[in-house]
Length: 362
Image 1: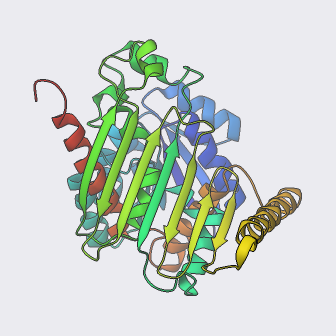
Image 2 (image 1 turned 30 degrees about the vertical axis):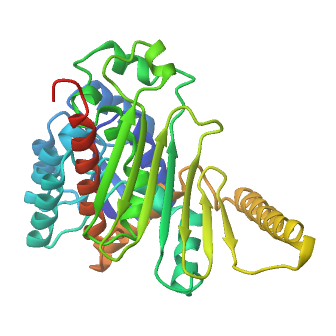
């Protein structure tokens, strides 16, 4: 029997959820809901959905979905997820999971109490290259626990379509978040680190505003962020968010005591770097050739997967949705451990606290 799910929040990201769920299969979208009913009606018309609502509680009462995907702006995540869990629905929350770590912990506790499933929209954790990285880690490729991690996440402001409304109004929902622009964009990059860090994390964060954003009338909004992290085991990490680095970096490096890996989400590639030495000038020839061979292998694989329909732009979201829905049907663990969801929220809380303390008058 297909899992019955609903969507609350019918903006642009909702279309991606519908399309990814259709590719995942085994589910049926039975209702859509948005405070602006016209948005819900338009989404329903595009995908031939019967149930259209402007009130979430009414939808939960009348439709009783097995799961709800919440794709509203972040300030609505916690109250909506809480209502859904209390009404017996499993919940997929788009990123950022919640506005604060306290909210994240409360939702996790409620889900466990109700014996329901809960997940975060960290879909970049489920791209094919990230899943291959985990297979390599599990096989012992690193030669032990990770020693150092690096996560780069970029956002391009060359086209001001996204940022102009944010800068144009202090009432914009992004400006109401503790981390403003960062809050809505960095959770994917932080989640990659949280997977391998323990809970005892110390953080040092600095942020500034780029010249580009200043030229657009950036006011107090910052768009460049650098973070150093260290956990209780001694694992170190670096996180960089930038709107200015070109070409934009979307990558994750994981270094072990023996070998290391570079995962490039932008090109769907994974590069395995093995320790070793070469005599004389071969050190300048053989390593580049080995790396070139791996890039060629990645290109061939991605090309073949595109031709055979295995690879889509939303592959990670499709995979996450499929695993989340399967965890509900099979009564198995959710795809993202709750510890990682809460730690991601905790790290973000501390980053935003530190960069706010740097502001004049604080």
